Every structure is written in C-alpha cells, then in structure tokens.
Length: 94
Image 1 (cartoon, rainbow, N blue to C red):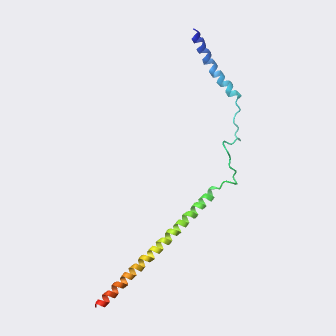
Image 2: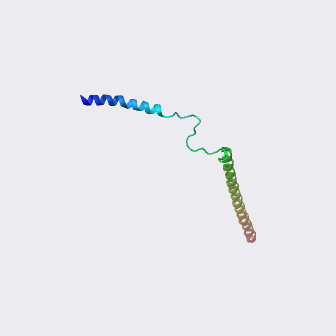
Image 3: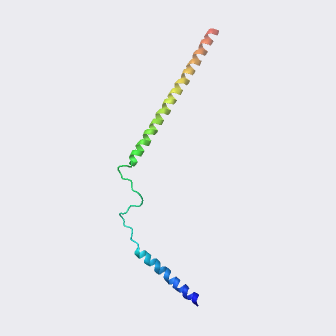
C-alpha cells in the first residue's frame, strides 16, 4: 500500500516539477543570435567567392590552352620535318 502511495505521488510530482522549471525559465527572444556572429564587413560575400573561383578557373584554362598550343606547334614542326626529310630522300634517290 505504501508503494502505491509513493508511486502516485511520484506521478504527480514529476510533471509538477517539470511545469515549475518551465515557468521559471526565460523565453528565448527572436533578436538573440545563436552562436557567435561574424560581422558582415569581415566576411566576404558570395559574389566575391564566385569571382575568385572564376579567376582561378580562367587561369587554369589559359595554362591549358598555352600547353595545347605549344604541343600542337611541336607536333606540326615534327610533321613538317618528317615530310621535308621524306621529300629530300625521295628526290636524291631519283
């Protein structure tokens, strides 16, 4: 019988304590910021990040284009040299 009495009080006291604690807490206001706020002046904007990304991409494309041009010129010189050498040997044989 004593256990039932204690159990009944427990079921009554736990929600009561919970309600009292909730009433004592201060509500969170909308103007309070969560965590640390970084001022807008010190953080770069999205457009700045996009611009920096596009600059790096353009530099990479320029390097790739230069490398391709250099490689193409080298291959053309090799072909011209081979063609020239083939013509000279064919003419000397005739």
